[in-house]
Length: 226
Length: 299
Image 1 (cartoon, rainbow over the protein chains, first blue to last red):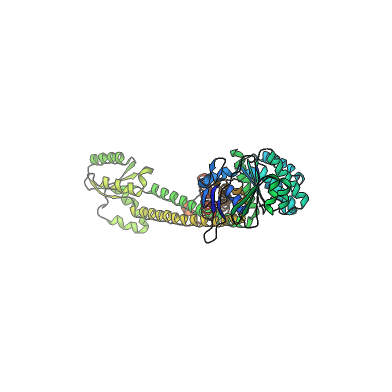
Image 2 (image 1 turned 90 degrees about the vertical axis):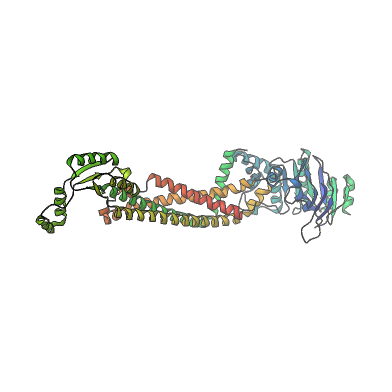
């Protein structure tokens, strides 16, 4: 991202002059208080929002100038874990996970097989034919991660992926994201959970009032939360 | 990416959409079916009128009256000229035969004709025309030409009755065309309204589809198929309704208008009419869904 600013008419800017470079295969935490602009930054990355000023390059493509018709093809390389899950309550868990493959025109039997494989990786294979409202918050979160990963995306964006989970599940989910990262996927996680940053010691960027105020690596990252 | 997998997905999504909100789809299909039944009945009535006109045209003969004193040689010459020009069959009618026919038509009053000192009727030639020449315009042109022939004094082909019937047929065609356009537009509005509801009820699906990389075409396709299915189902219902109409009401109508010799076969929906029903049904459904998708689906 180069000098990215995002503002909505009539409101103060949400992001101000952000410069950010995430390497392929990297794991990055985005942290900061609520309203700091973490979610907006992620939205710019999967083109749910366009920058008011500046450039956003993903895999060498300038998404700020991307035509509307090109957005779907970019998104197919990006898995997103939404804070509010965005699961369809009338479709089974397997159907929700397979949604990502359906839009690619994947044959039905392949969709089913790959959905089950993704669910197995998050430990929910046995809940494949259950409707999401029957699952706990943690289980729903894991379904969302399975949906984001089923297509083997190059980039995984997660907005507060452990916000609704107990400490044991939080570790499980984070370990899962680390595994995905170890297999080569670039992972960006927005969180305000200091314990995660302390435990995993990854590159961490701190946002405050729309501005990138600090950056740290490894064991120094925890200091950013102070 | 597999086209068959996508088509199968679109079909399943469309059927699922119908299954999830059956009531609005029943309303849309019923409206379309009623519109198509109206169209089918108008087409069947028009077919009967065309048949009637054709039959009437077959009965109308052109009668060419000749001048007094035309010699038998000239009459024979003229008869062959008429046969050549009209491509029809000619028959010479003598004044005596014409008088006999008139007396027969007049019945008892015809006896008065016997008191005439001499036969006032001229020689005439009756021409039975081929089907192509039975159209009012063609008949008029032909009669103009025949009038210019030597020894011809008058030409009669019952033009008034034929023109009146043709005018009625034209008015019916125009009226049914206007009605058809109105019904078509109404059906399109009904289909688009039901699909607007479908789009609203599936807004979450659409949002997630877009977020996981669905193209606009992919999001729109199931709604277009839904509209198309509505049209095809409505056409099937309309065909069944018309067939039932022909089976139960057709014979009664034929009996009621027995003097017109409607027959029963012609009152059934023809294969061509069935094709038209399916074509128009599909077009109405598709137009309605295109309108809905363009107006209400902001992807």
